[in-house]
Image 1 (spheres, rainbow over the protein chains, first blue to last red):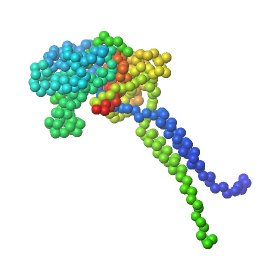
Image 2 (tube, rainbow over the protein chains, first blue to last red):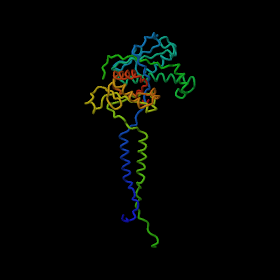
Image 3 (tube, helix red, strand yellow):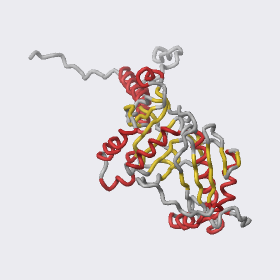
Image 4 (cartoon, rainbow over the protein chains, first blue to last red):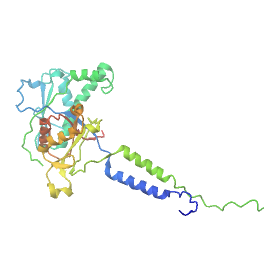
Length: 182
Length: 155
């Protein structure tokens, strides 16, 4: 081993470190996503092979919402604009003026949704959104009345109590197949 | 007079680039933390509609993704132009859903099974027929917690 000159430690060239870092950065930019993770949370009804029992329901307690393949709404036989759905649903459930053609009481109110296989998913989601929004607004009003606080701010137990008073009962029927499926 | 050396004429000192890698590493770590590796390239077009009643999915590990939409242009030759289902990273049929759910369950502990949520990312233009078939398949497989993915509607 020859006695080499006393070599000092060579400095790492900082320029290439930046290049490496840029490369890694671009790799991560390209291969990852900030995945969207929000949506409407829905609980599907359990599957049963037998058809559901035909319950004797008073027509006044059922709000039937039909959507056809042209994405038009029919609420209790009347054509309705999507914007009006939320208000109509709230009126039906809460029945403030105790009308005889609206729900007996919020605990007995049922919203029945029937779509067509040719309906656009976008329309379906908006309809579902409006129905859920109607319930959420009712829960909020009840929460403000009872606890003077917004529905999101009261505890889980209190929220359960309000949901027991105004239960979200949304029944989805088998879709019709008049429209064309894309 | 020779004791005082004239100071260098004037050039502005060069910007030190020693901190450049630090900045880049910081950006890199940010991206590593905030994003997650896209584990599946979307073979179908999913333009989710906007909605207001959104709940955030807290625990991503309990969520499996089902995409429904028309195949992307590159995939149309292979899969056609009608809406298809993508489970994970493969285009599949409704009959493949139970297996897909079971495979997902194996990645989690028994106690977490009831909390599994299926996130459905569906294109707005898809018609409900295929969505209804997927929902029926999910119900038959006892996967009842479902999340319809949507963008926040700016009211």
